[in-house]
Length: 379
Image (tube, rainbow, N blue to C red):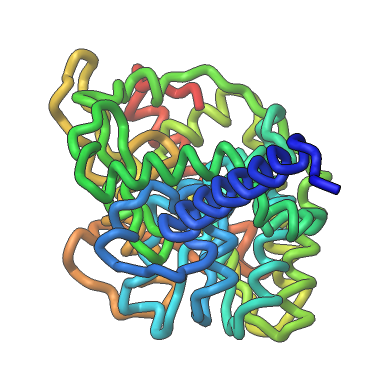
């Protein structure tokens, strides 16, 4: 009995569909927009790709590469601390992500500890992580990444190889590989293969006064400290050294916290960081780079100045890699360099010196406010 015609059409349709899906999967497999598969790995291509600030690609970096030191935190870490700096004394990667929440940081550390033989975690903190009311617990790309403990592995790979988002990113990266997007306008960040933002290109001016004067009043959220406790516990269970770094901010940011009536909360937050980390014992360290003088008191260009670039700051909480190098050198015990070092920068905190440290910081802030009565002080 001859087969009905529709059977032949159905078989043809299935064959064409399979070929099409196979071709799409092969395309995404070769371009590999998140460096998930690394079947075709050409360094020059990888450096041209636009993916390294995404949580999906950071999870793949944590899964595939081999390193001993993980840098975690927000975009301040991602854009400020160079994992290739010689002071680390071993292979390091930068797993910082934009808008990292305390919960995400805990999950990133947990995932990385499962995949890497770490001997150290460096967690960069700022007050925004624990005070910004609209900071989401997780970003959309976190939920889609392998950092998310509830992520289906099968669904993850299907979306990477056959999904619209992965295909769009593959096409975008193909154009970058071919050099068709060399002259993209607007802000652009370029990352190395260790997750560090090595090039941060801005438009003609990112108006400093729009950034330094923005009005954001935040309230301390103590419940978020539970995620820091979990991060400390994760490292302690694996006998991994944890260095918690309270990252530098421009003095205008601390003045804004004071003006908003949140100085006590800021000090309470630092006290709790020290308590949580130091109670765990071991080799754990807390470093505080909060300051209102020296590098953190760099003058802001006058309104209307569209050319001057600040030496140490991009905005009140994002410091330049040049300042980040000093943070790296300090926490790694490198001898102080005379170059660019015009002030005591960074202190290791412990319960014994905490009260005096906060007293000195308050004195610095009062002096800054007296010297800069007209400075923009909203955080």
